[in-house]
Length: 90
Image (cartoon, rainbow, N blue to C red; front, side, top):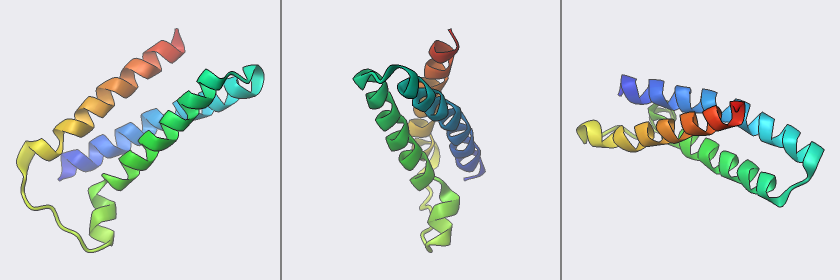
């Protein structure tokens, strides 16, 4: 569970700078593609926030011990976000 919380916070930390960067780019260029990237980042942010075990605990839900399979999708999201950050810095 701790690892899932950490990965969730890492994902949030990767999404927010990308979101701000895409908003800035959209203000400069006004491209529909950039608007799509902003929407993608918003959806990923909502996904990351709602998959955080801290939020689940706040609403009274508990994990049922599914092991590493609960963490694997979040790790794939982290890798995808790292690729987007890399591409954004290029």
